[in-house]
Length: 347
Image (cartoon, rainbow, N blue to C red; front, side, top):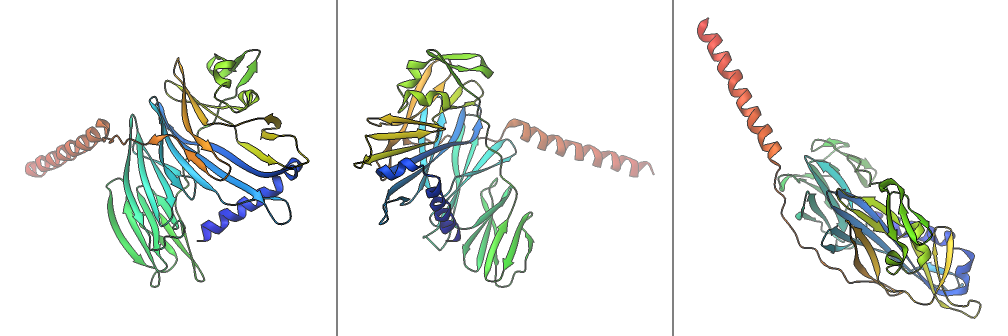
């Protein structure tokens, strides 16, 4: 519950950043997309949607928020599900592990080379908010009730144990997760998650969109028809995958339902404001020698209507390198034991 109200507080602070033009509109919505992880030619994408409506004082205020999470690869963009918070990602032995908090649960997904799968769901007894949790890979510790935490090994997909918080003192448990008791409150502290990938710069030059880092030029018309406004092209965020590029729209605020003081709908992004007559689907663009548009969904003014298909899971296998390392260690230990045995016999 504390996390839920903290997010509402953050959203409320956003009101102060709405420009003066917002006073001329009766409604608005903002969209912000983030690539939280990339592996091979696939990526994990999170979109936060915030609708605004007019308050009693006539100002625009947020009426809620939701995260929509997608898995993107060369075949399309697929909905994983919505959540109360943005996924956090950790690296462990050749895989990314994504932790997605939702009402009453934390879901864990594994992403590798050409694979993506859900491996674990830890449920709490409180379905009204996202449970507190911390990660010290391979351990996930979740507060499943007011007085209990549960620990799971995500690599093995097994429950390690539980801990009664009424009897526990502040300290480190489960090989890396620290429990901090602050009066009647409990705080879980683990490892820091992976930093998200960095976007590359783009430039508009005449009728072309240039990506200098990859020395790539794309026809502006081909890109612009999948944006709400052509001017967005210069603010696109481009992420390098192994054999492809992922182009993500900029963060935007869309003002609609104009009152008597305004002349039409308005789209704001970066430091630009552009008049728009209509908005449509939100796309990400996948370029691997051919530009491919993948629809995510359509904002409706009060919610985000997802149009992407549901994710299709592909199981991940343990890389052979780890199996070879294991057997190499076994053989080495056997050789050491045999050598020790021979030395003892000679004595």
